[in-house]
Amino acid sequence: MEFVDGIAVVKTFGGGRRAHRRFVEACDAFHEFFRAWSRRTTSVTTASQLAAGPVTSLLLLMVAGTALVVTGATAPADLVPFALLGPALAAPIAAVGPRLQALRGGTAAAASIAALLREPAQPQPAHGGTPQGAAVSLRGVRFGYEPDGPEVLRGVDLDLAPGTVTALVGPSGAGKSTLAALVPRFHDVTDGALLVGGVDVRELDTRTLYRTVGFVFQQVTLLRATVAENIALGRPGAGRAEIEAAARAAQVHDRITALPRGYDSVVGEDARLSGGEEQRVSIARALLADTPVIVLDEATAFADPDSEAAISDALSELAAGRTVLVIAHRLHTITGADRIAVLERGEIVEQGTHPELLAAGGRYARMWRAQDAQQVVGR
Ligand code: ADP
Image (cartoon, rainbow, N blue to C red; front, side, top):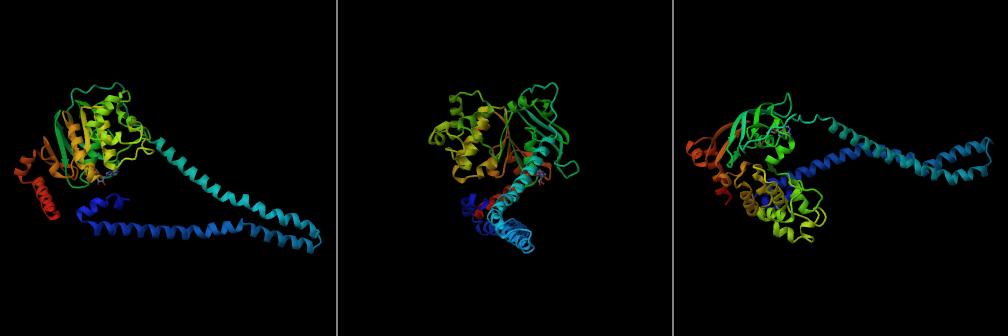
């Protein structure tokens, strides 16, 4: 899927050989898995099908019947109905196998649901606080996904001033996405605190939190509902004019009006959108929700080279006047950010504006030079 989805990027950036190798490896791995799996199950399935098959039951009846006739216990004519009806009885028995399989699948699904329901709910405050303003502060934030697993964030202090754009950069696996996910409280910090508008996110009730913090992440989730409903998810009461204004600002209005039923087209039915378009619908959703704080993943622009410019414009529209935390993957898109924080192995190792960090000649300056060199080679 990755290979096919990214074929344009693969071609453009000339990574064909490597991407192709990964594709071939994935196919080989599946081939191996499937062979091993079918080898394990084929003998059992074949044996059970043979045992419950009409030929087997006919054979059994004839052997047993002949024995009874020879010993004089049954008249030969009495065997005829058995011979005629016996094989027909095999079919219902053969149906038991697949039914059992379905039952086993159902039981496994029920167990998964039960496990999900057993997950403890995130603790909610008794009296929700009210955020004052749109500042976001991280104070000595530590976080690990597992209680005794490795720490992904190791004492992060960061201040996002209201109305400014802060970019998070750093190598893959540094903890950027993890840090961003803490702001809308997808996880709770293990230690330290994350404040939105001066209030710890754990002290905000969910409704207040989502009225304050919006997000546009890489994984766009569109519901099987109309495009208009999808955009209005954050503000269900919004009127059509507001929805259209948001879509226009997110550069996706023209695409929506070109759909068979326009804004009333249903996602997955008559609204088939590309990755980039879905991305812009999710930006429209965030624009309409109009939260003062926005967390976004700039990788969105990678999804679809064709709509990159449109996404970039939509993101600028979204950033205007809001407190923004952006996970940046390409440095040239964030040179204008009010602050750039460099994250490495769960710690902020540098922060400042683009010129400041370049002048400092540290980690960021090296990343910048490396990226420049890559671009030159790419050309
Ligand atoms: P980045 O966004 O900078 O690439 P991430 O925040 O995605 O980094 O990942 C930081 C570290 O946390 C990585 O070592 C990654 O393997 C780990 N990690 C990310 N998500 C999970 C998860 N859901 N469960 C366990 N570990 C995770």
